[in-house]
Image: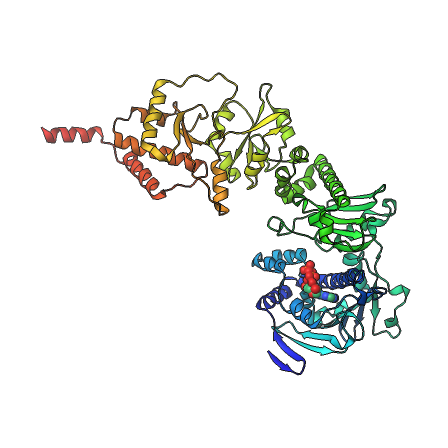
Length: 639
Ligand SMILES: Nc1ncnc2c1ncn2[C@@H]1O[C@H](COP(=O)(O)OP(=O)(O)OP(=O)(O)O)[C@@H](O)[C@H]1O
């Protein structure tokens, strides 16, 4: 760091440098988003000023002329985004523009792959914000002053995005921020009224402050007149539905800045009565990259009070299983200076939240009823998240359960069967919805547990999502039918069970003796038709799959011993019963158990021992059997 008077040259945080390099390369073809990001920052800064002015005496009256001006000068190759918002102090400039303080950016960096296209998509979704300026600019200058500091405490920040930036104090009578971009030669075609107007309308049409476009190379234009206004800064959610076209809704969605693609559908309601509020909710078209991990996301749903943006309030207004929803809630009844703490206990907010949940589920149900590609795309992107609702929201459990989709033994699709479809196809006497949980669809489809069901033509749902184990732990019944795992407890398929014959029971006892502590019990059973044995979980205990998931999540799981069910009619089991050599019998019993574990997608405690046993079997199977000639020869040699 070098310093003269109040001027410092500082190095970027290494991560910023990494991010800048990546962005310039990856976003080359998507360069227009830089303007969306700068306008969105200017809009946020104006929102912040308006919000702080509600309570801070020093800021009163400073929020009268809020708006965003985009100046361009084709001769000087410059573009400026000017706001009269909250501005930044020197420390804030260093914190916000020189380091990555926000963990969101950290997650973004962690999720990058070498695949440029994918990265570009990710950056588009994430909105890396300010740094997007370097996609088109060879130098970026920021001049700013925090609205509650004196004019002498202005700050200038300059960087060419190559590892360093310069920061100095300046006099700045105006509050707010000017970001000036010197455009690289290949991006100077952007300095055109029509091009800029198109970009602003596309991404930022519904930003809640007026955006003016001013051509500085044309004398007189910098004053601005009515014709320089580009966007429609009205709060779309407050307007009547009859006035709005689909395109208005879509362009407002884009201006929310989280997803560049179109929403799947939306719902717009004005609720009048003892409490009045408006809701505009969107079902998004694609999942953000961190949807599954980012469970505390606050963005997504904005809370406005009488059209003034107050805060991102997804946490307060949406249950986590609906965290993919986007939109705005505008209340006419909450006080403007409401705090997060106050919101937590507000009965009005509880009511709004219940409506948000109901309307969101309405939207999803409608999409499910229409079916087809849009529903499938929705389910692939958000199905796993929606499933959390079955676990977390008792009140909506049945409604969400109706929306669930799974793979099944009677369909090729990965998630095409709903519980209602299953019930409709159930046999007359069947009162159980059967399912199997597994790591993958491939493991599920080849599981020995399905044999008895295939033989009796009973459909089984195949659950392969990580969350499915928790899901079924919370959903033991649907429409009066019990949900049951095919791999648990005693299997009763509505037929009279024959008592197992004595020889099968004796064989099971012999195997248990060999396996000892490795198994809870060994039982002759009726699950299998093609395989010799399979693993069965205790009726009330934890399934093997659940134990595995919990261990992967770093949790201590008490060791529970699985049961081994053998198929007394299988050739291997019959041959084992006849085996007199106890040592050989022991090896076969161990093999039988390991095989059953493997078929389950389980892990062997001693894989090397398993391989050794298989090899020993192979040797005995492949060793040449003595021919008649060999026998004759040995007979005559002995003679
Ligand atoms: N015009 C501005 N006025 C005031 N502060 C600003 C302005 N532009 C940027 N900032 C500050 O710099 C921070 C970083 O901006 P950046 O655009 O990189 O990320 P962000 O807006 O916080 O989030 P996102 O990644 O969603 O865009 C902002 O949070 C804000 O505090």
